[in-house]
Amino acid sequence: MDLFQNPFYLLAAALWVAGAWALKAYADRRRFRLLSLLGRPATLLRLIPAETDGRRRVQWALQTAGIAFLFIALAGPQWGVELVTTRSQELQVLLAVDTSLSMLAEDAKPSRIEKAKREMAEMIEGLKGERVGILTFAGAAHVQCPLTTDSEAARSFLGSIRVGMVPQAGTAIADTLELGTKILSKYPGHKAIVLLTDGEDRRRDPMEPAREATQAGVHLYIVGVGSPEGEPIPLKDDQGKTTGYLKDRGGKTVVSKLQEEASIRLAAAAQGAYYRATPEEAEAREVLRHIRALERSSARAGSTRRYKNRYAVALLLGFLLLLLEMFVPERGDWRPPLLRRPRRPSDRAATAPLALVLGALLLCGCDRSRSVRDLWRGNRAYHKETFDQALARYREALREAPKDPRPVFNSGAAQYKLGNLDEAQQSFSSLAAPPKLPATLRSKAFYNLGNTHYRKSELKEAAEAYRQCLLLDPSDEDCRHNLVKTLQQLKNPQSQKDKKDPQKKSGGQDQKQPPQDQDPQKSGPKPDRPRPQSGLSQEDAQRILQAVQERQKEVPRPQPSWQKQPDRPPEEVDW
Image (cartoon, rainbow, N blue to C red; front, top):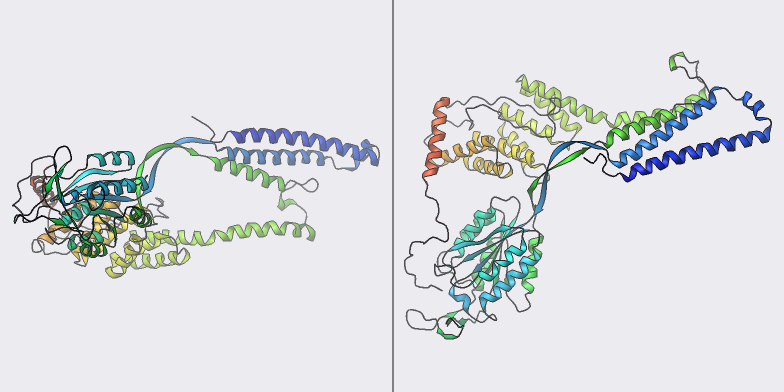
């Protein structure tokens, strides 16, 4: 184990001690020489109090040791191990490319599909360090490359993209948006889907999936590949030679055109933008500029073990030694203050600045101590179930420390117990919305916000709050249970007539508390979860949960993309 983080400062401490000793020796010799100029040193030393020389040595030792401890603090002494979770700020972007037959048209050189792959390569290069994934779609959408921060791996998938790789014919933009939104919805913050297509979609209207993507925080950027005038779709043999052009069922040559109007409306509905592909590929840089301006989401990068830095111990010792050195006089009474003779006015004037400094330091902590005291008293009142008194104390704490989220959270808990659901909702909403607050605090605020909506019979809002809680803390089983119960009531509104809080029978905490402090004088109240009033026993609740889990297992899993898909009915347009 490395005992010091910056061992260089230990050498600086040693050099300081050696230099201070040499400087003291030089000062003693020079003082002796000055005394010899005034008279015989032995005679002059009799005029100086006997304790003066010893007190000078004590002052020198305290000053030298104090500064040496400051250097040791800079060296960073460390012992003990702690587990640290690292988080990274990332963007999530999905690149979706059209692989239908119309992408063989050559109005974008060398072809639409090759032009789209070049645009994608430049975007992947510009998104290094971000999460990038690739979708391919024609009559259906498939994941070509899952979200990854490895840009080289993402680029390697571009070589395998070709027209016809998706067996279903046509262009399903709506299915692509639904798949992309499903993949990105589990990430917080804003996300983006970049669609590279000619826009010829005759399956179903993609406007509704675009609005759902907007609600999930997904922005849609469309790069139109092709020309409004259109181009016939060539048919080529194995050697790449053109053998003819695609014809429709009436025998007419198909001319594929770039559908810009529909693409512009679609991008506007999803808070994005539309660009036409150009030979200079300036649109790729514009899309990257818009994406980089989006709010990044905080993702857990991993956990690591590190030594605890104990610099504060050495820093405190150094400060105390330097402070003690100031109170060691060269001359004067060394007795305790109560045994000393009355000081002269000049002595009081000399110590006045020090008293002012100490008083200012004490005043600096008064506001904080009042806030902590009010929180502690509010928690005591809360546990005694005198919620009105607890609420008054929390408001006093918030007045003393307006930036502290704990009084806001605890006030919401007290309002919840008092039945003031609107005020409780307002308190929890103010903590759930700001992205700068800790994720743990926001997840608990969303949990309590969901309980508040549930008691107000706002089931859709309650389900959304529980979902946000699970996005921030997937390990919260209480929230998962409440979400399942809320969704059951949404599907079967007549199955449960009571409108009480969705609670687990296994007990636990109803109002979760902020994670800043576990000290009961600083943390919020942790009331017992109220008993459910639905009349169900614990065994009945367990049977209901088991039945839901079994029903979920019976749902058929989607087939992987490599398995054979059932044949779709023949469509009028398959390019």
